[in-house]
Image (cartoon, rainbow, N blue to C red; front, side):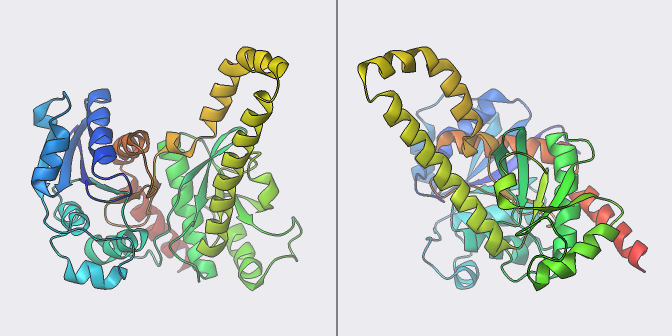
Length: 340
């Protein structure tokens, strides 16, 4: 394996494309000498953006793609019809082993469909979950799944727990990560049919550190490292999390600037406040990997700034260096052997 991680970046995907995407690519290359980026998009448009920056020309190249998949397009149809779109061409680079990872701020549906159709799931993986890192009082937790599988089964959630444990151990560096199942109470008799059926299966799973149920109010406290749920619940948690953080920061700022005295206090508290706010900024942690595929696919927010694009690219380096795809393959095979 080369020391360089090659990232195929969808230069045309997202609300702020191509400007934020190109800037994020340049910032990533300038901050880490182990990255090479292939910017995939309309060549003259990407070249114009890129011409504003100073960077190592050998570590950013452009691959032309004449089409763009818009957010409102039906994902399956878009993937099949727009074969020369930036999203499809970039995914194809990963499939053909010309890139180690794919990053996009484009259509979530197209990324999910394209990742599974073009790159494909690891043999034995039943569903590929989206798994973003979310900030907590103690650091970060992995929310898995947050948007890919709204009708998951118990065996899917067990695999989510296994893949999430590998990611948190080898990418984030948490030894023996604690795994919890989202529930409406700590008691085992609580929960819907999916939770009740999943609970004993997670208890029996030997290659994870399962600690039981977790209520949503305890997630921000960092009581578990891997938060397991199906995508409907996970997406609600994620969106509420993001909305509440933004609202609270706005309320705090308004309160601090409401009077002359409070403004003086705000000036004194500003350094500590900035540090705290930064720790709860989701863009600090990059995008959400789609785990369980034969290559790394990372989906970032549609409104991603250059900083989030940069951090999404940087997380690909750790994923690649730790050989996460192979470790997931081994884990899934081991689990099948244990069951049989």
